[in-house]
Amino acid sequence: MNEFAEILNLFIANVIAYTFFVAVYGFIIYNVGKNILYLIRYALYYIRRDTKKYKSNKDKQ
Image (cartoon, rainbow, N blue to C red; front, top):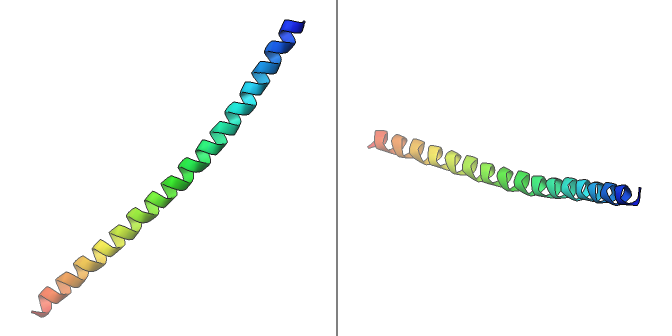
């Protein structure tokens, strides 16, 4: 019974540690991914805006 209790205790401790690490890493990955997507969107917006400006200037000449 004592060995079984130790194994159960280790298992529960591992499950708690694993869920904690998954939550932390998930949070980090989520934030980093969000920032990267934001930067990509920002860059695309400015590239599009500049190309439109360039085309309109070309038409004026």
